[in-house]
Every structure is written in C-alpha cells, then in structure tokens.
Image 1 (spheres, rainbow, N blue to C red):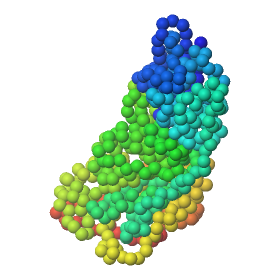
Image 2: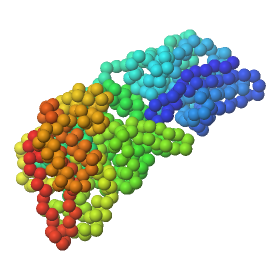
Image 3: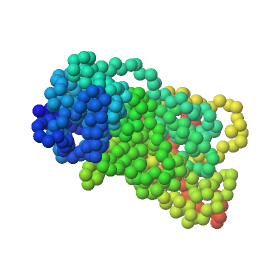
Image 4: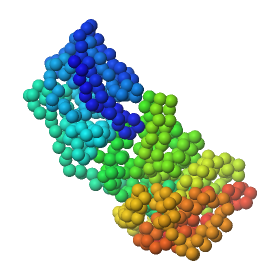
Length: 530
C-alpha cells in the first residue's frame, strides 16, 4: 500500500514542499530511501524503529520504499522522521490516516519516541498556509514559532505515542493555543545616559538608526567607540509583525530559535574580527545557511576594529550593503538570503591609533598609515554614509554629574522619524531612507536653491566624491529633516551637516613625524540639534 504525507525542506530561509511517499509491499524485508536524501534522512530508519518499539509497535517486516518528491532536489535534516514513521504504520494498514488528512508533518524522533526541535518550522507553517493545507503537526517545542503564521492550525505533540493514540481514535491531536506576547521588543541594557560628552558621535548614531544609514566611528583607543556602538540596541524601535516574521524565519533556518515564538527584538550581531567570508554572508555545505549579515536582518551588524577583519571577508559585504540581499551560488545550489541591516563599525585611524589625536603623538610612518587604511577599500567606504571621528573626552566631561540624554528620549525621536519615513515611502515599498531607490530619492528629496549651491560647493572641495557619495549625503540630509519633524525641501544646513559626517574618506594622511600632528577637524554646529 502506498501512502503520502506532505512535509517540507529548507532552501535558504524558505521552505519548499516535499511529499513523503511510503510504499509498504510484500517481498524480502528491507528499507530504501530515494529522492536525493542526505545521510541524516537515511539514518532515520534506526530512530523510527526504536521510537515505534517504545510505543508498543514495530516497523512492519516488509519491503519499505520511501520516496521524497520532488526527487531532483536535495533534502537535508531529520525532520522527515515523523512523516516516514506515519507512512510505515499507515501503509501497513495498522491505522487509518484520517486524523492526519490535510496536515503538513515535521519532526525529528528520539530513540524513545520523543519529538525534537527542527529547523524551519515557521517557514513550513507559511508553506502549509500557502499550499491550502488545514494545519501543521510539529514538535511542541516548535509550536509557538509555527503558530506565528495567521490562518493556520498548529498541532503540537511531545511524543510519538500521542500521534499513534490519535490515529487509533483514543485521543484527539492536541491543538496549540498561543499565549499573549510578553516581549515588548525594547532592549533594557546599557543606556546612552552613561556616555559622557561625544555629542557629535551621539548625533551621528541617532541619525544612523533613524534612517538605517551605515556608520563608522573612528578615533584613538579608549575614547568610547565600542561603548557608544553597544548602546545602539537601546534606541532601536520595536519591530512590526512582518519584520518579526522575517527575522524569526532566518533564525529558525539557522537553528537559533529558543522555542518562545516570534523574535520581537531587533538583532544586534557582533562577530569577532577573525570571522571568515562564509561566516559573514553565509554558506556551508551541503546547504548554505544564513551568515551574520542575514542574522542581522532588520537590526545591526557591528564590526569592531573593522581594519582587523580579513579584507576578503569585509569586501563580500559590498553587495549586501547595496542590494540588501545575499546571493550565494554553489555548484549544487543557489540561494538568496535577506540582509537588510544597519552596518556599524569602529576603527582606529592608524596602527598605533593616535593619528590626528590632540593628546598624544602618532608614531606611525606615512607608509604604515596608508597600508592600514588601505585595508578598507574605497568602494566599501563609499557605502558607509556616516563616518565620524570620535575625539578624546576631557576629565571634566568624564567626571561631570550633569545629566545626559537617556536612550528612551532618543528612541522616541527615532520612532517618530521612522513613522514619518514609513508614511512617505509606503508607495515605494520601503520603510527607511537608506532603502530608497534612485527614483524615490528624486521624488521625495527635493532640495532648495541654497541646498543645491551647498552641494555644488561640496563637490568642489571634495573632487573625489562619487555619485553614490552625493546620493548618500542627500539621504542623510533627508533623515536629519525627519528627526527635526520637517517635510519641507532639504535646505543647505542639512546638506552641510550630512557632508561633515563623511569624514574618514576625506581625512588627510599626514606623516606626523615630518609635519606634526594634523589640526583637529572643525565640526562646529553638528551637535546643535542635541
């Protein structure tokens, strides 16, 4: 007898349907799996046999053939244990399949019959809804995640015996009842009120988070670059339901969900500088998995000490920073992974870290400084909208008892600015100024005559500024207007402030041992909004 149960396998972060066909027929006892099944799938026979034995049943002593259709796509993981086990007992006519009609089955079996967590239950639930199935049957530890998809019934079981009891008519399949959400999405961690001074850096972080712009903080060691970056999560607004679905689907595909349902806090990923290219953008064999760029989707990817990363590793971020997706092509698979993140990075201006400092002399030669900065290519820096020199803090600022602005106040302005952007850009299918297409920039970022003149003067002063750089200056200026609550055309002060924040790619490289340390950059007026 041939029976078939729908199941699912992952391709990137999305699921595709797999029909598990089981033929239990006469002949010499045997077990065969076809349909490009990975080793973990073929080893499932030992798990299935032991699990059924602990439930008081046996694998029928017949010829069992399992086909995973479509047969030309590779299937990985142990999530097919449950549908194969059901195919064996139903195909041997030990039970009727009525309770499982219209359900997508997913689950890994333990030797004692317990059902263990599987990757991609949220994607599988979405697939079941799109395929018109009435529900999904998943392990209880995955039920909260699967139930995040509206319009689908989720049945959650802890043990294979519960499914067999339902097939025997002794009990109904337990339907999962989702509880109320308990996570507000607000991060209660390090607060910006702990940061003393650094008004320019604080203003840059606020602009970056409000518009989704990439950010580079550079300056001498110990001035607070990492401290400031680590407080970015405290001013990130909560995610919408659609964004939470996107992020949870990625973490589920990577096997990083905790079974608590949707992820409602925006990710903040901070990989070590020894991370490889596949670790940053994803990859691996046999099936490519999400990397740090995708795990930071709708959140922040923080690269501390950016020049210390392997150049090949950070150069692969060029395409995700531009297109906001990662394309991984292999001989056996090609996947697209979402990667719309805010890049925050920190760096020293030179190997010793003191180039341009007002408090200590740099000991690096001109060649050393050029080689150090050469680790960051021009095209990569061109994609970083805000490049801010973080200066040393005076003792008076460090020891001051004066209250500084807390994260809650900054987050309120960020949320208001993002709501303004979402309303203005809804027609273009994006949410943030940093995601705007060239058409959206032309139609929503009108400049006054004074702003056009300021832009022309900027091009005269910085002959090396590219068209991309000009475009990003305009986007940052639009975000500055959003933070100020203005929908009017962009004026000259906003263009000037946005241009000042592109400091690293125009910072002069001067050998301090020959000409003395360069004078501090004059950025007066940048932090006046604070």
